[in-house]
Length: 126
Image 1 (cartoon, rainbow, N blue to C red):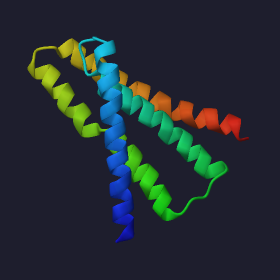
Image 2: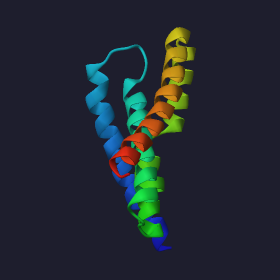
Image 3: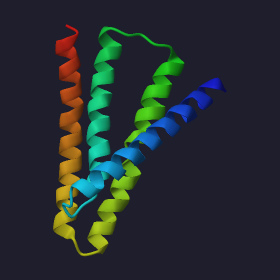
Image 4: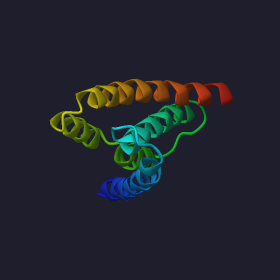
């Protein structure tokens, strides 16, 4: 049962961090699509890649700590459901081009960020 509380605590932290990032990034960039969610997903993907390498190369935390970081913090920080809803909202508003840019940018930048995070920490700790 303890693991559920650990995940919940990580989720609370990740959600607050995502909300904070979105609140800062959104007013800075008016690109016609939800930049805050895109930023959270790309940053979270980079952090996931970095964490994978750190866990593989230099740190072997407890199962509870892994769950806190991966499922809790990063799971709540990134958000596929918000991404999906925002893409649908753009389409329903008739902003199909913006929706396509948002979807493509989200997928490719998030994948690139995972690889980037892995690469940075693989090089740093190898």
